[in-house]
Image 1: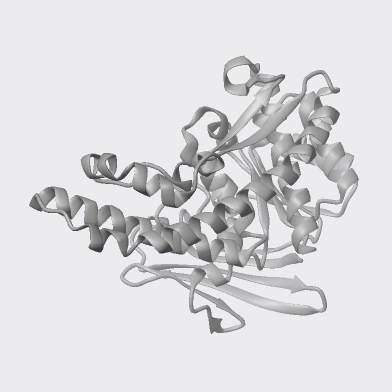
Image 2: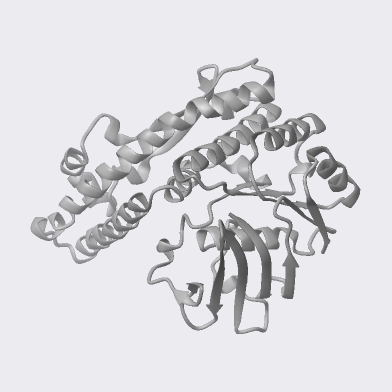
Length: 359
């Protein structure tokens, strides 16, 4: 799948823009602050229905305007699809495919899979487990619609249970029967999510190791490990054993919503022992493995978004990344950079059809 044309109206700092795109490599170059990352974020919207920067949809409307629109022509094998995302200021976001609106935004996820490599990736190592869970959920959701449905339902049920716990605490009351309404749903969805995450990480880990060996020269061994309360206990027992604790905390303290990914190098946590260079090499390996798994599971080649990475990586890692991207045939790429000359040099080394857009 390739994006042939992108049109933006009132999106972030872009009043109106249109790009006729290369099926291979597209580069957006310009000074800091001109909106290069915002363009890449538009592609992320086309893929996931939301911003990769975590901004609320309404906040992405250009100041003084009433809506934003992202529209794209996408070549889907022999067919051309039109995807349009509309966010009015005063109503909910709508995504249309060929003028037909999706009933749920989640139904669009997986149509145009994507992987982004950006300066924000370092948060995966340094931040709490929440950022790694979101990353894991994003990977699996693009390959498994049943997983995404189970995840949405689990989160909705969890919010309802937590709201009831807060209500009990506020009103100094408690009703076990009311609380247990949510137990069977949490058990069912948690089990599905746990098994999917476990399988996905088991398959992902050796691919991460493979790419890391290429990038680093095989000096260290890295691992991606899945950590979950459900590894040692059922969701049902977790809810029973922690009921009194949940009442005191007024939220559900155990479950798959506390899962995490552990990144290790030679048996030690990467964030404690890995140098900055080793961490960057690991993150690139992780993202390349993500592309590999999405291709394998969906038979679709994800679009690759490279945001400002040439300012963040040394020449050796850029060379390794470009070589791997070229060798693995990772599909359509979108690159942002501040230096046109550097970008042109990189693109020539990839030796594919490309277009450079001055922003």
